[in-house]
Image 1 (cartoon, rainbow, N blue to C red):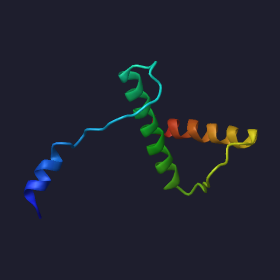
Image 2 (image 1 turned 45 degrees about the vertical axis):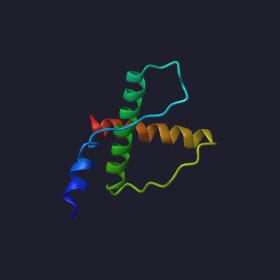
Image 3 (image 1 turned 90 degrees about the vertical axis):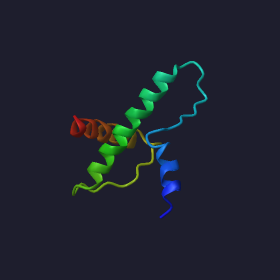
Length: 80
């Protein structure tokens, strides 16, 4: 193992970069929104490890959009 390379890489642990095309929001708002997305994604991963059968949803039908929103709410409830 290259210990020097590991030490160099450790300098960047915990650092992340966001790129947005919305120049009307603050850096803090962009970071907060991104962190919220990470919470949702973690919740979806938790749901997928259960026995609930989930498949990708295509969002052009109102029924599917409603289902997606309900799953997001369920994910948030599980996280809470």
